[in-house]
Length: 214
Image (cartoon, rainbow, N blue to C red; front, side, top):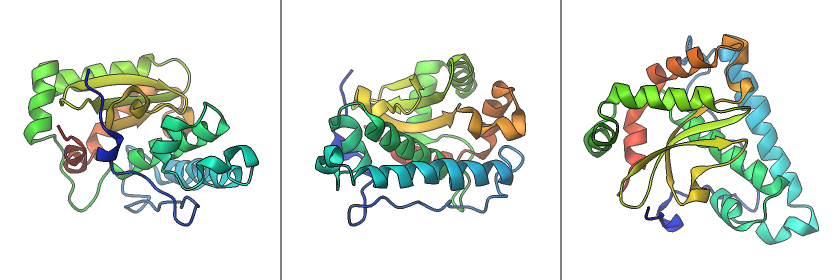
């Protein structure tokens, strides 16, 4: 595996040393029934916003001053594993997650180089989706399932526990499904598999295609 150069990523940087709560790029009702407006309100306005506020507060502590002003990616890769990296990881994960859904330039299927790579490695788009869902269902506890690529364009499906992100493995994140219970419990209770299956209907593959660079 050839690891990516972090400089090739669209880094998530603070403004004047503070990270900002990014608004959703769509109305909260637009993802229904895959994700309800009530779930988005809790997920974005409370969980995600809470991670942003907590990270900003942590920079007031002397032990974390060195990392103030760095991007989320730089914090994850360079800071010792701590509450700081956990908050940064969750912010990055959520921002990549929320922005990958419906938008005015929505495309419902992968295209071009990414579609070719998926078919070459997994046999078909449907086979890829099945393996991706299975990895999400099988992840014990809380975390994320990701499709990522290395510097050569090879694809990887990884299970990331808690706040982990594929960049710590030298990979470029392409798409993710959140399998923390707060992402789906109001709508699906313990039916994680149903939740994951529903998310394909709202993915904006046009955006995900732009993340695939090799």
